[in-house]
Length: 616
Image (tube, rainbow, N blue to C red; front, side):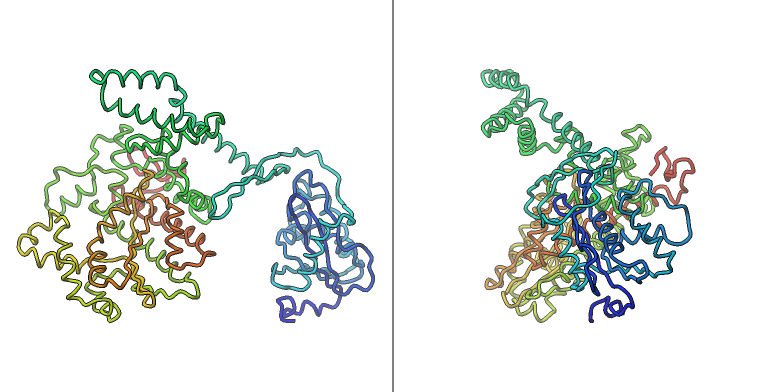
């Protein structure tokens, strides 16, 4: 046979060949096995697996199927057992051969495992061979597909009997498991129960986290509950326009209107709905100087639709070194030991950027009017000493995303990705024939001239502009560099792609960067539309927060526009968030190296001492 087991010669085994499988559906468990060389039925090939009151899992029915196959095989008959469950093989392997003392203490399915081990002991004593072979599930393996049907039948058929129903004295923990529908955002809950295991532990942790979320929401909405006080103050200020402060009056006026809006939605009767309505109203008001939930960390973690689940996967990935995770969490909580933060905890008096000062001293320039050394400053290209690292971090994230989008195209896509490995200026692009076919260089220069004149000239460009304004505007246009270009000749469409790595402290970081990027390439888009009106030109901006924030809906919509396969979009976003975190850690390590040099780990805390009584 052409299957994996057939190519290995498994079906030619000189003995009994049996395949077994277990099924766990909606808290019900069933097991079945399929004897490929069955001569006479000795036992029923399927059964229900009991003790579901203590929780269900796929491992228990898999172990039950193995026991049923052993029980229906003669002790003197060699057996080859095919299964698709790795946990079964590991559970049995602990009891085979020499090694440490094995025990059933702590085993969740000790009742079935003990019976299976006893049969194996008899087979070993009789000198009979027993082989357990792992096969891949859902690969059209005949034996595996047959026993899968039997396992499902055991659950649904009322005539099938049940075994292993005796309860243990272990405590059972009930909880509700949230299930989030992909892309829809709807959350449904399933009632679950089990003895203490990893799922119960995760549910306890999740419950504790939800309790903390509720505390922050109640802290945010505390003032909203003082309805009568707020209303009296608002009415008083409306009557007396001369004696009250206009700024405070406007703020309370907006709060009162938001409160009325919430009450009109009839959500105030339900406590949880009232809290969520208050949160939305508070976010609509917006205040960049004060966090909505009391702390910036709570604001960042509780914002919806910003890839927090993918960030959590990165922080829970055992392959990521703990130091990388710690630096990421320091950034999220806002305790990166830059000069500004050290001054806040009274470990430093000077808040000016040490890297900028060092670079100016090396150039012989004045060290006056230095920028403050903040987390945002060292993550920008405006910081001397960090510009190269920050630029490399930008390219590291973008090139991986660009290549991922290109390789995940649908089979019918007609898009062609231009220069995936480097940026290209407009002048370089218009040396290629396919771009010359869109419009001529002369026509594009003419259309761009008037648009470039409306763009503000930067201070360091003033001298060149004053020397020859016309030539300056022309050169500035043709020297503009684009992160990515995607062209579709069939539909006469050109997408200009741009990637920005931004601060994600505020929830409007996407809108701010979108506006900034659209203004950056406004002259290119408008000039192309004027020079080639029969073509469609669109700018697509990908914005990523430094700490891993990506607006999911916006990201998915742009992937859809670029013909990315629907099944690969989640994987692309997960890999994208991981690259953002890796790039962030590279920037942080470069900063620590330049400020503090290489330092050894502290023997007592296993943390790196970077000076200033600060450990990372």
